[in-house]
Length: 126
Image (cartoon, rainbow, N blue to C red; front, side, top):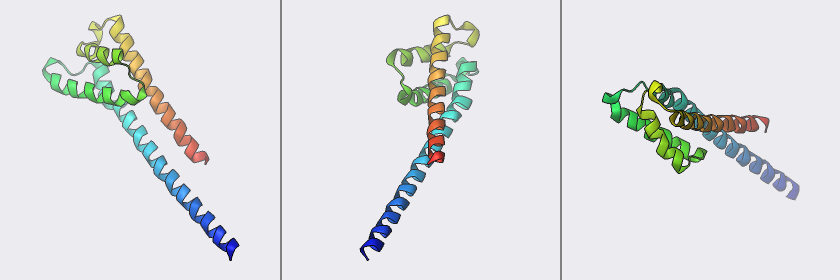
């Protein structure tokens, strides 16, 4: 009886672990989709400079959202201050510092997506 009880407990523990992993996997999938969405939508619009001066409120919302998404990726205060200024001008008007800030921030976003994909592959291996 003791062995059966122990086996049942082990099965229950394994099921809880599997459910926990599935929940965590779903969270990683959702987070990855959110970051990929940022790259495809808000980031692409800002980088292309397609929101002219009349749409400054919409541009400001995009910038705020991108900055919020960059925080867990390692956004430092200098980059947080540089990006809003860099995104205000059209791409042809941006100087080398603005271009560097945009490139660096895009790399941060890409790294987050890569890390999330690696975590997702780790779930599939388990």
